[in-house]
Length: 142
View (tube, rainbow, N blue to C red):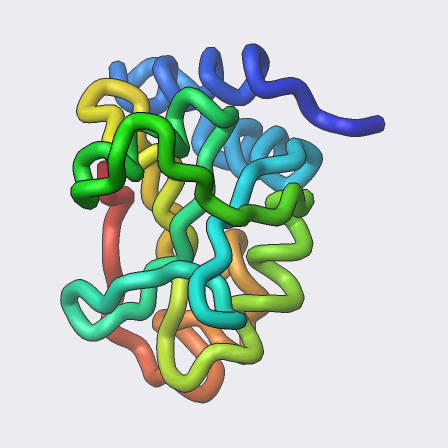
């Protein structure tokens, strides 16, 4: 059953408030289609703290806010693909060189969520706390 953006936003808000179930939030993210901007033939990402973060957005409005922060004109079109969160975590993250995670709605101070490369989020073989990347430990980032 596909996920729902409103449901995902509720899970994120609860986790950010310290009241939610992080594993339920991850499950909802995995079931939900998110928008992933494409630039020059690849997925938009940034490196921070030694991790490659793939950008993803819950809707066109969240992507537009990000585009404005990045200096885009208000009417500038951005190319994107709609992908399930599971596809990002299970397929794209393992294809990245080095540790990678997903940064969701990063232009929204109160609604963003980071899905770091940790067991239970990404495949164990590419998680920082096991597999090819060693064991560095990291908590939730938002």
